Image 1: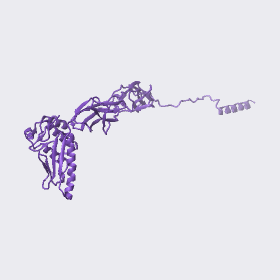
Image 2: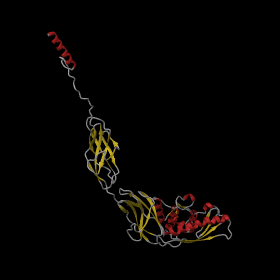
Image 3: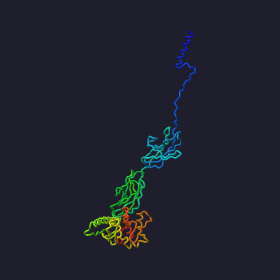
Image 4: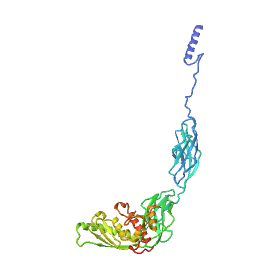
Length: 412
C-alpha cells in the first residue's frame, strides 16, 4: 500500500506542476511599464512692447528666455479683441530674429481706434508657450496733410495749382483735389476740381471759367474715412483778359497744297489766340500770311506774320513764337535795353521763371532776337502743353516789367 500511495503522490505533484505549482525555485516574472521618451517642458517667453503703431498695424515680438529642453519650431505673436489670445485666433510669424532669442513680428490687418490683446508664443516639442499679455490700442484716423505750392499759373479765366498730399491720416485717400471760391474758406460745396488719381503724392489741377481781375480763395482737399481734410488757404487774383485778334489773308483761288496749309495755320492761330487771351492781358491785332519763299516763319512788332510752305513750322509752337515777336520780344527797344550780357534784367520775369523751373538761380537768357527757356525757338523745346502756358506767363511778366509798347498798356 505504501508503494501505491507514493505513486499517487508523485502523480498528483506532476499534475500540480503542470498547472504551475510545486516548484521550489520558481521566479515570478516582473511586470514593466513601456518606456516613453520625455517631452521636456514648454518654452519660457516674454512679449515685447509695441512700436510703430498705426491705424492698421504695429510691431511687437518676444524674447525666448528658455527653450524648455527642445528646439523652438515656431514663434511669433497672436492677438484678439478678447483677452488671452491663442494661436487659434490671429497670429503672425517672425520678421527678424537675433542670437539672444529676441524676435520681431508684425501685427497687420487691424482696425483703427480698437483695443487688442497680444501675446508672444513659442512652440517646441512639449507644446505652445505664451508670453505675458499686453494691450494694444491702434491709432485713430487723422486728417490728411498737404503741401500747397504758391500758385503762379494764373491767367484771366484759367489757373492751375500744384498740390501734394503728404500724409493720409492713417487711411486711404479716396478723393483729392482743390476747392475755390471768391469768398474765404471754400469747401467741397463750393467750386471743386477733383483730380483723377487718389492717394498720396503730387498732382496738378486746372481751374477754368474764372472771372478776369477777380480774387479767389483756394484750398486743397482730400477725403478718407474720417471725412474731408483741407489745406491752409491760398489766394490768387486773375489778370485782365487778353484781346489778341487776327486777320488771315488768303488767296482767292488756293490750290490743294495751299488749302492744306491754311487748315494747319487756322488751327495754330486759333490755339495761339486762346493762349494769349487766357494767359496774358495783351491787346494786339496780327495779320497772318502764307507766303511761298519764306523758309520758315517770321514776324515784326507791327503784327505782320509770314509762314512759308514748310509744314513743320505751321503749328502752335511756331505761332506762339512769332506772336511773341509781334508783342516786342526781339523786336523792341525795351527788349534790347533790358538784355544785358545775355541775361534779361527783368524782376517779374526772373520771379516767374524761378517758380516754373523750381530753381532759385534761374534767369532768362537771350540774344538780339530770341530768349530761352520757353521761347519756343524749336519744335524740340516743347515737351508738354504746359510749355505753351509758360511762354505766355513769361510774356505777361515782361509786360509787368515794361514790355507794353506793342502789346497794349499793362493794368494789374
